Each structure stands twice: as C-alpha cells, then as structure tokens.
Image (cartoon, rainbow, N blue to C red; front, side, top):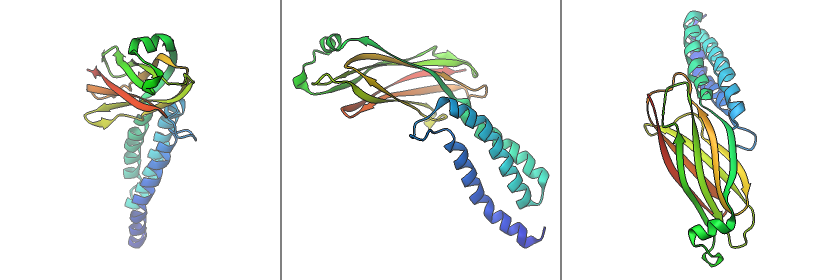
Amino acid sequence: MREEEKEMARKFLVIAMVLIFGAGLAGCATESGYYDPGRSAGAGALGGAATGAALGAIIGVATGSPATGAWIGAASGAVVGAVGGYLYAEHRNSQMSSAQAAAQSYNYSPAQGSLVDVNRVYVNPTQVRAGQQVNLAMEYTILTPDNAPVSSTLYREIRLGGSTVGQPYQTQVTNSNGTYTDQVNYALPGNAPPGNYTVISRVMNGYGTAEKVAYFNVY
C-alpha cells in the first residue's frame, strides 16, 4: 500500500471506531429507549465479536499489518462484549400492602398531596464471587389523593469506584396505591472486578421521585 493510502486509512480509523462502538452499544436499547436484558446479552456477545472483527480489519489496513489488526480486533471485541455480560433478568413486582394499610403506616391523608417513597432496598447475598448473581430488591410506596393507578419507571444502576457498571436497568409498571416489592436478578460476568459495588434504586413518576442505595461485595 502506498504511503498516501495508509495515511488516509489512518484518518478514517478514529471515525470508524466511534461509529462501530456506538452501533454496538445501541443494540442494548429497545426502540422505547429502555434497557432490554435479553437483547443486551445477545448484543454484548455478538456485538463484541462483530465490533472486534471490524476494528481489526480497519486497523490492519491502516497499519499495513493484518496480524496487528487481528490481535487488536480480538482484544477490543472482548472489551465490548463484556458490556453484555452484566445481565438483569427475572423481574418481579408484587403488592405488599393495600392503599389503606400503606396510608395508616405513613399516617397519610389526601390533604397532604401525593407521596412517593422508597421504603428500603437490599441485596441478597451481599458477598459474591465473579460469575455469580445477586437479587436486587426494592420496597416502595405510592399514595395519591385520588387513589388512582400510577405508571412509574423503576430504575437500577450499579456503580463501582464511582463509575457505572454495564447498562442501567429501567422498566415501567402501573400500580394501584399501596406498598410494593420489586426484584430483579443481576448476573455478574466471570471477569467482574473485585470490590464494593453500589446499587442505586429509584422510583420515578409524575408525582415525584425517590431513591435509596444498597451495597454488595465481589471478592
């Protein structure tokens, strides 16, 4: 390859990398913008391999060395594929207390307006190894003056050392007034770094937002 052709290939390299990584991560979101656990797993594995292969080919051309492109492509594919390794699954949402029982617990009256609260959050177990899974649980209460069903977005985010791990999880539910428990399993990949992980659990709707945090350790 002539030097001017190599130089042009190198200029396109940065643009191509941005586009490919963006496409790989986009596979983890649904058309509505919410994270899809099943799609994330597939996109992580297939997207990682495809992205690595594409990057390897581009780098091989840019450097004039197919061998260099091959090993860089394999490494980048492993990194991108790891995003899909953090998997949320088996979401469950059920009522714990009726509207009347929840109102008594909070000493609530309609004159107070609307109430949105996360009662507590917890992780089980709190000590795990890489490759295992934890159950993320959240108990929350919604009370409104008209006692009408409320559509809410339930959000989870896992953080390690101040950085988000994998993709945040969002799902929508419609609940009557009362107290609910919401659970989702979170599977860690075999190469999950050890450390203390923070779980942010949040309820968001037209009446307000509330959140609490819990913790677990990977050793």
